[in-house]
Amino acid sequence: CFEKWNASLNRIKKDFKFMLIETNTNEDTKEKTPFIVSFFDSDPRIPNTQAVAIRHVVMTGDIAFYCCCIGKVNMCGSWCWLCKLSRAQWQLPMDKRDNINPGDSAPWTINDLMEHGEYVKNNPEVGPSIARGVTGPPAINAL
Image (tube, rainbow, N blue to C red; front, side, top):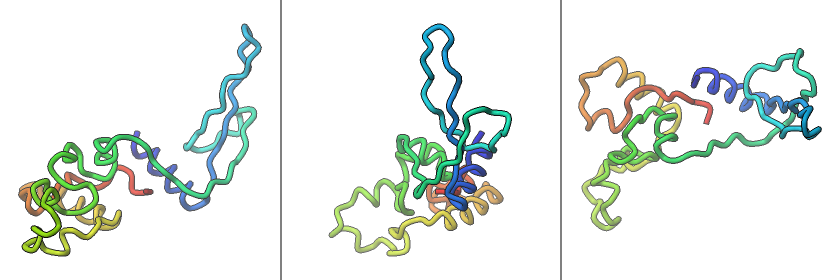
């Protein structure tokens, strides 16, 4: 499932387009059902489709879903979802963080997560202090 989402989101990010599909009229009520958005390849056989330009791709969901998408499955309570800090580290007040490596508090980039996720995937013996909550490559790298 994530592979199709990711491919579609990357296409949207690149071309700024997606398909808007109007479903058929309900014969009993004569009402049209709401529009649906398809992030997958368009199909010329589907009636009432139109290309729509967008400016930004956003994702909504809870932190657990977001962590799953960025390759930090089941880690949202143990590791910061923005950087490499552990729960114990990110809960410290700022004036108590003197012994923390500044690189650990730098935000992850999607490229960092992809590279580190591949490393963790190919080296399953790495411990938590190396993995930093990353369990594998991001399922969705288009964000």
